[in-house]
Image (tube, rainbow, N blue to C red; front, side):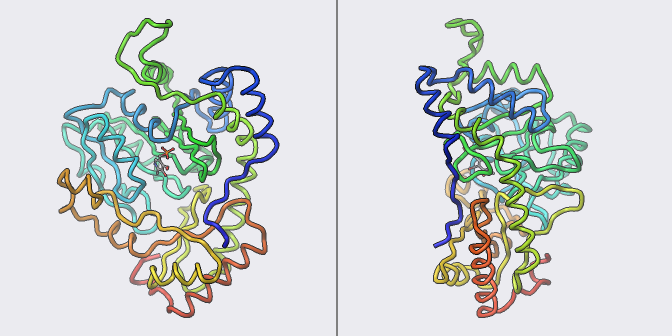
Length: 368
Ligand SMILES: Cc1ncc(COP(=O)(O)O)c(C=O)c1O
């Protein structure tokens, strides 16, 4: 079976982890600092703050703006639940707007109508490796005095023009094993704002600048030096990984038939954390791919507003027609950089045979 993800761990990772373990610096230490500096440089941000996960990066990014009880944050329901959960953790309320039919990211035309006097921030999600329309969102936020927190968990190296994800407001990245680069578990906040980065650091360290002197109630959201050691081995390989993902995607774009392939906005660099197609008879499609030896996954089978805790919070009656429709159509196929050319050909053959059997998706029905 060709798996949907296959994290790559080589000799460099082993050596660096062993070196970290042998040094005695196991918790947050010099390797975390080095990874922060190198990741900030990669993204083009002035500051980076490493965290224990992408979820804690989002949570801290919100706390760094003082967001809490009584506040609202605008985000999308077509995402991994961590985007919305991080808002709930702070006591603020997620306000959902639908996604764009073509590219799966926040429908910018709906944002202004969702702004109320309680709105404090906009959290677009750069889903599947395609950046949300960050310049447009940044512009709206600027006009209304709102913070921008990009959920860039899937967007390491993605860009609009030559400006990378993580350079508008605050970016929150994840280094979960399936991501474009990994530290095992881990995350990173990036920003151009030095004062904000300092607040976030303080919150990450139990509000402590001087040892055991606590200025505010903070958290332990630190990354370990062992995780950072993996990240230091992975980061130099990230550009090559992304190029390989993009090359595989280009083959899929050219060779898949009877399915709707991803739409990439002009001028955008998509780094294909996922290659997500829309298909006819999705559940049967997944089964037939499996029979042909190709793993796939649904990201995500239930939109956030229909997940149990959000139904309990009263979101269940809300309607996001594009999200609800696309949730039924999407399937992600393997696009990870360790795929061989032969495996890519196998995936193409399996998708095309399955689409021929089940019939093509009507483009009009799904607007590609
Ligand atoms: C869009 C999105 N947001 C947030 C997260 C949370 O990241 P983590 O799993 O590292 O906590 C993820 C990753 O799983 C994600 O895909």
